[in-house]
Amino acid sequence: MDESAADQNLSVPFIKMQGIGNDFVVVDASRCNIPDLPSFARYVCDRKFGVGSDGLLVVEPSEIADARMRMFNPDGTEDFCGNGLRCVVRYVAQEWLLSNLSIIYVEIETTAGLKSCTYYAGEPSSVRIELGNPSFAPEDVPISVDSLPIRGIELNLDDDVLTVIPLSTGSTHTVIFCDQLPNDDVFFLLSPQIENHPLFPDRTSIMWTTVVDESNIELRIWERGAGETLGCGTGASAAAVASIRCGFTRSEVNVKSKGGTLQVEWSEGSPVVLTGPAEYVYTGVVCLG
Image 1 (cartoon, rainbow, N blue to C red):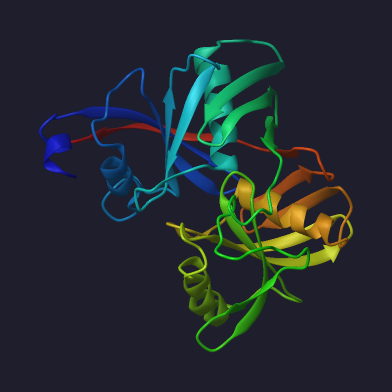
Image 2 (cartoon, one colour):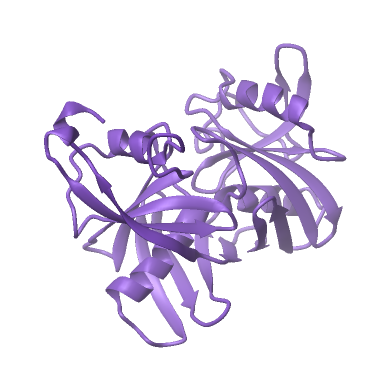
């Protein structure tokens, strides 16, 4: 940690949560003030020297919603995350709203705008979130091209040319349709090249995608700032939107990744709706200084 954080001798309570294997350290800002969130994210997400997670979620008070969510990647960059949003929704419903209803409506302020969400209590519980309308506009992705055709563009790598579909579902994603998901050699060679390709000024996450049938797709996921992850909510949504837009699937798609399955609903001109689990794993305290 940097000296400013270490000098505080802080004890930071947290909750470890996960959504289809996408795991997060969740910190309630009303209980502890962390002076340098990017630095704290790099420390706490480290799986060797910290708690270990795919990201840091910070829950803050909001003047326009039930709560505000901030999400930081393991490299300290701030981002937006669908699986993280579902975890925050469950946390706010149970810890802040203190409702014993079986269906709880929650609004969360995020870097990608205000999100309307629903927490369904019970066993198993689930969270339904509206992510907003996806965008294929180059300036929204962002990507340094003039336009993005429906079936994608050719991306030149060191020794390969791939057809890719870039889009934004609140975070930058690149969908690659393939007959079968890549093996480790291909995945770990090409994914970092795509993430850091000069066409993507803010880098990009990569959703390697196989269409199983008109209602099901499967993913292997590389997230910017994190590497391979078991799940990605905005990424699953991006892959589903691309498959629907290309005519490969219907408007309701089951998206399976290594961590589990999410349900995505989308039709042209409508917001993306994502439904899936958000689970508590354990509670703990991080001691700084």
